[in-house]
Length: 378
Image (cartoon, rainbow, N blue to C red; front, side, top):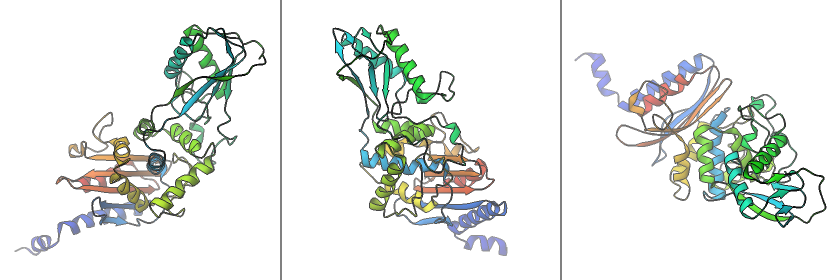
């Protein structure tokens, strides 16, 4: 028998796969790309392929997998956020300003304000003698979290306790004055509903709570955050998690992982919730540990797993020309300048579930990641 054929027969299939993995890593590192990557069996936790899996690199938006699971587990999937409306109502007239008190609802949009306005109208409110006032006291005055000095943070709108339409105008541009946008949007909707806002000088009044708007449950918010990688929404929630403070929100997330996973701050090195900060550091093993824990968490795991992108399903096309990946890969992606990352779950052709994470720091491309994911899945 040919010696090359005999050698191939004697090499286990796993070893051949490992050789492919090592070649993939060598090729990336030859291009100046730092790699932290690995794949683990979901059931046993056994490592199948790994390279510098404990090396902490910039994770970009895979950070959201860390923050959203902590929020789901701590606050529970059915938790909601209340936006309150206060005023001094007498005989159908608010005798001063109508105050909207925000508490960090990231999905307070025109459609929801219209429904809230309908509720106010049913209470008999016809006029507001004063104007629209915003109560932003639930959040502190910090403009942005630490670590955004050298990032694409200018793409994120201002994060306020009462924010309307993600603090973007009708054309999707960042609002130059988020509070003005909120007041004008609310006033316009009230007037279209038939509630006049006169804007006269504020009168002495004794306001009481007139109504409130309840956000969608946390499970729905997390679905939007992870499916669409919504930076604004997760930063709103992290800030609220810290009672209005980004640092406190991040510290609560770190405390959760220290208690629940024995992952200390050296493993959960984050300064924000979205992954915009290049000060964030996570390793492939840290991400995989959290993902595996979430997969077997009966309480909130189903909601977390469902929030990830389904490759080849929903609106997302395959990143590689491999029809075999259709609906067999669920992931959170991450992109920043010189950062490409991916973590999630895949199902092999024989039905085994794997947990994987890939962090590439350097001049990498999406194709570099999906080449290896396709190899693992097939």
